[in-house]
Image (cartoon, rainbow, N blue to C red; front, side, top):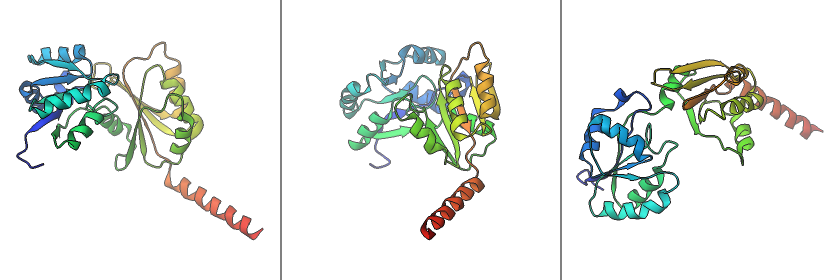
Length: 250
């Protein structure tokens, strides 16, 4: 695929709240493509209206992406250009997009991703836990595999980032406090870039109590948890090694 190959699919980030966060390039691409693929055509339709743009829109979301991919590929192979957007943020980050991108690349169709809004970056930076090394976990498993994943994360020394829904945030904070330690520093960011944006930083147990006491919790949530301290990991490793030596001696 050369630089002169025309781009057929664009991944276009959209504002996570504040409409001023749309980029000039994103507006231009949305105005130039033949079709816009939207997670929710009503939500994206309001954004397009705000931007003064009128384009054919197709629904492309978690529940229909497998059925849509083949039809979209056929249209792209004929030269139609498309922009994929999610309801908010960058498509493909905890939103549909991966499957279509993978199949486009497999067929030699050029894909371009624009930089832009995504919720976890401002939440990470506002936490103050350090962004030199971090792991983005997205949404934790709701049921199957949840406890296993939490126990695995107990050994993680990088800053951890999670997405969570308002109705599950208290349970998640309580479980993390139980597995990672009640005093583990964490940060909850809610309604990022919006009028009532809020970030609360405190130990996990305090955050759990804070949000449990609220009558209602609204807005998309990003949870950032400080990684396990390296010193603690080393202490545990030396302890395990000492126990192994004792076992061998016996």
